[in-house]
Each structure stands twice: as structure tokens, then as C-alpha cells.
Image (cartoon, rainbow, N blue to C red; front, side, top):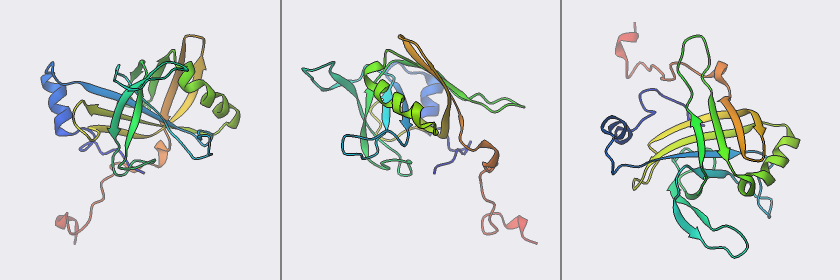
Length: 195
């Protein structure tokens, strides 16, 4: 599984987009949800992927709303379908990234508006299974293939819903056993450590 490295969490392109904030650069925020009960009609595992953007028309449908979104490339070490170009469906959601504060573990909160059609069938099964739902947050720059920032290893810890929205809280899957710093100091790279 990928790990977070503070030196590598943002690509240079994303850092420039945040610093300069040019109007022609669009940052696409995406969420990927995975759970053991998320399967297609052939019982193959699937992921629910959403992008916070109106997106492009992907498929016109007669039996329901059209499918809109973006086809985006996953990172080579993605936990599911690595290196593949996959559909992220357009869903309006609000979120706050994990905060970095002393004396507390940062978590992420997400609110999905009007997602009954996309998520309800899967969430009903996931609630009954009572096992961890994994979450990956990615940011893309529109027009650039690969993700520019990835926050892996998050797990949905709490969910509440009403007829208008679904709210979820996510924390790191195994925060206490995560190496920090996660860089390995090897003698060939850090010769001053060898006596």
C-alpha cells in the first residue's frame, strides 16, 4: 500500500497551482471508496469513485440520469486497479482534508449531497457487513494524466445520513503502526550513520 511522505505528497505542478492560483488551472478533487461488499453483477470487486466537478458527458441514458465525470489515470501503486484509467463520476461533495495538529490525529470529513442513485445500494450492504470501508483521496490537475496528490490508507469511521446528504468521517487505517518518518535511512545513502 502507498504511504504518505511529506516531501512527496504534492507534485511540483500542484504546488505551483496552489501558490499561483492561475484561473486556467482546475484542480479536481476525487474520492475513492472500497468495501468488501462493493461488487458488480458478476461478483467482481469494484470501487465507487467520485470527482467534485460537473465533468464531461460519459454516457447518455434513457432509464435514468446521464453519467457525467472524468476518465482519470490511477497511480501505479494504487490499491485497486493500479495504473489504469478509470471513471470518476461527477458528485458534488464537501470535504476537509486531515488537519496537521499536535496532540491529535487528523481526520477527514466528507459530505455527499444527493447521492442516493450512486451510493445507496452499496452503503446498505456495507452497513450490514460491519467491516472497514477504505477511502483514498486524490487531486488531479485538469489536463494532466496522473494524480498530483494522493492521501491513501483512510478508513470511514462514522457515517450519518438523511434524505439530502450523507456525512462521513475518515481516519488513517493504522495510524499507530505507521512509520514516521517513513523514510528508511540506509548506509549507502547516509554514509555518516555508519561507524
